[in-house]
Image (tube, rainbow, N blue to C red; front, side):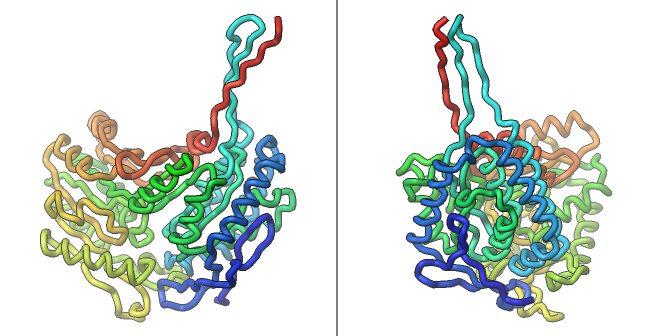
Length: 483
């Protein structure tokens, strides 16, 4: 596919970085050049933030929910009309199979459509305190929001964070991940087809996290930062935001347990357990990277899971038959291989544990689906987010033991429980220290439903009503009618 060159979006104008520097993006499947994007610096961030501030203060965006709804609806429709082209760009930059890229685009459109409707439902409350005195609590947009997105699901996580911010009346500056900037900017290019969308409401600067991202975090005219990323990045954002008292919304890492009891519907649980860890080559914050399995299932369920994992077909992202893509980069590959070697030393390797190179895969960053059985609880493969196709299986005998294993890490983003005994399933689900607890399903990430982390998995919620309300401030208005 033709190499595309993208530019920053500032106040409705597409422009190169002030210094003229660019970055190149390569396909993780074969190392081919896919995109060129600006390498922005402080001056580019300043321009984008100034445009967002001007739009927030001078346009009628914050006070016109019908316009916001209209614009978001039109954006979702434009994405749907261009879905195949966007999915192709997404697949080439991330390496994910094309059918997974299409799924991501449809998920992204779902968030836009949901918040297009929600834009007209932003509400406050009023109370008649005494005769002639009315107390009103009004929801107002927080202001200029910096949206910093990761590379694993760049379009879905863009729209999950930006769409509610726009619906609430905020203006935005996007800093997309360096590895997937092009496919993200391609979505923003569709704004050119929506003439009613006010200029400056959406802006974007591409660049590296240590320059453009840091400049946004430090900028005094940014009112809020919404980040999806790793723990260390989130901690750095919190420290920086404290200097200017910015609001922060953080979704960080996870080490999510997927608990399967022997009385579960195992035929239903099996494909969910497989997809929970190997979709997108395991590069998902809510990935079910710990399979907490009742001990009696080790000799029955685990061999079936191993067999299905070994059937996954690695290959080029644009081939419809591909069911396992590469990881994002050589750096990520090396990191995962380091975890795998540690896992081999402390547990039983069930399958995988090596790089895939045969059949033309040597130019990409492919890993065989890997499963370990019963590493010690303090092992790094149990405690740390690997972000790759590596599953840890931990066994238990009682529901109390299952719960202790599930809650035994510093993370708390997602979890699941499988059992036909709904009382037992709910007993465990209510005690799981995680922002999402699915029962007899996994990774049901819906626009209507809030998700987010406990403990070191972050703060605040995305999705649903809470996902929009977090982009607002509450103002108290007290009106004396002089009666």
